Image 1 (cartoon, rainbow, N blue to C red):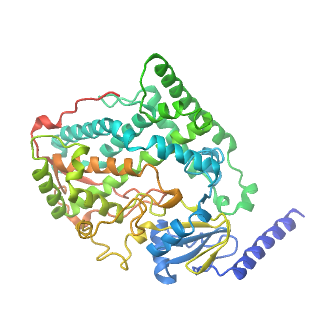
Image 2: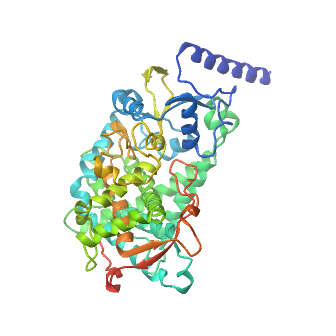
Image 3: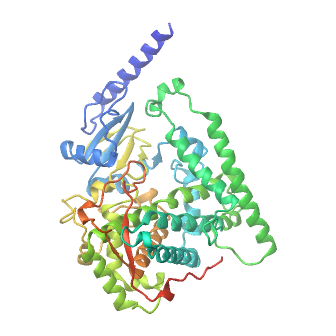
Length: 507
């Protein structure tokens, strides 16, 4: 009897999906199989797979992941339809059991559906947290961490074992990203000057690692909702993870509350800002914790990932590296360390950053949007409940809008000023519209700071016996895209030795 009911349920779902496909004029795409859809056809790195399918089926395609329709657009024109023309109808989020648990049913910003809660927390982010004034007040933290990275690279590049084989950049970039985000969000540097992590830092690191492990543990049933009863999620593990995360966050929040009670004057760290704004915006403790961890999730890896891609391009294209360094020599000289205030006088550097975001967006498919209502995109029907992805990686390589799209050529942005904060749909590293990333300027500043210091302080070359074509420019799968093979390069100091010394800044 039970197998009869299962078979009947499967038949009902398959029939419903068939009727849906006949009723709606859906975008073209690879032929889905019953129940599993296109799951077995999708290659390891999804954004490249979708890009290849777009060459066959066109710039808007249907991909069935299990029983869930995913629509992928791969052109600037269609991106505008999704992110501007029909923005409100496509502003919800698809949450699996992992993101549902981590966000407490969308009680944060990243995974919240569009509605009064989302409008409120986005207002907090835009008007209170990521304002130019607050970002400027936190600039000394960013510069301190980048200077710490320069000091570490300077020390390690002179070690005998690194002179010919070079150093692995990811380690240094990851340390900047980790220390920067924990100081901005929690007001804490968990790692001391000797690289030793304190007890809270070890717990924080363990929580982040456990969250990644839990997120990766979900089964195929995530894509076939009516099979979830056969593959229950480990509710206990998710609950324990949430409790552990909350315990650490509350302890840090209580520390900041006590400090504020004893001292006068506003603190600029995000945890202090949210606690101060709690009553004004009616922010529950769950919402504050959700927002703090959103910032950690969004900011922990993306800046380091983008900077590693940029450095790979600098080493692969020594002409561009030399041109950046010539600009430094004209504007800053060899007599001082650059600061973020210098960025406005370094137009070619800013072009290099834009070109990196064009070819190597940290989230190539963005976080998917979910249709709140039936909508038409590119003349096709998108039923309510469908997921919609913008393949910004493909848009950045579209020969219809970019000349020589596969060439790393920053000069294109001297020839035409292209906005990358959601106003020009050819360049969308931070999205656009209602779901535009509120921390975009912070991300741009950190990437620019890390890249500029590495290039101002050092000349970067390939390890002995390595050629430019040996650099692996492929990416790993995932929402964010690391380089598959970490960059290994030889760093040669180009400034006076006293300019490599970090002077710690405490805030």
